[in-house]
Image (tube, rainbow, N blue to C red; front, side, top):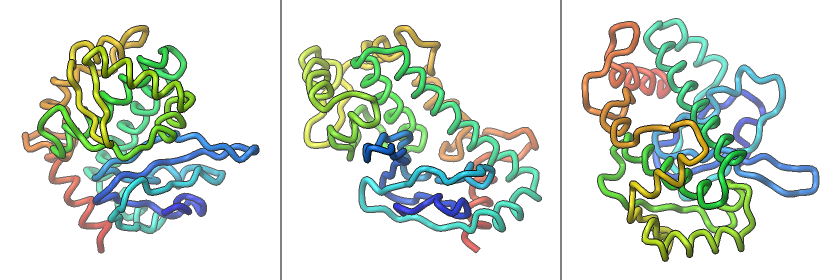
Length: 234
């Protein structure tokens, strides 16, 4: 998967594990620009790009299905319902990118860390991968620093502050939210509202929820998601 996206043809359905997209600089440094969780589709936007994209690397052991990008997507787009679902996926990715960029440009280190912790919590909750306020975070402090635009020393200080203030605790790759209200305050200070996380966890029309949400074509989004995965698997 480290070479994902280089040819612009491959799309991946991440079934198990975490992965990230990295941007490499001319001096050899790298920045993590996106993090993928189980259920995410990786590289869906690459077929419209005219240049090579950043590499994708696995953060844990993963199980992923490879999809031939150009041929399969052309076939999928002939079905209106699946085309709407693909646009929904791209919209979710765009909103995630916008939140991340806004956090990097507008928040201090504590706010950035809070935004990251809340984003992973909300995404995992919507996918029904967690039910409480704790989740496994496979990123190292070096990778967190790369993702948030901080130094490793700064990440360590911020994590210690959040733990001492009983807001968040990160121990042995286990992220535990101790004070959700205060964490939201840190994440949203100086930013447009990024989400009402409880509301989105229960009402967001994602394919992972069990409620009967409809897309604009009158189809259950969950059914469209299943159809999308079945077509990709053939």
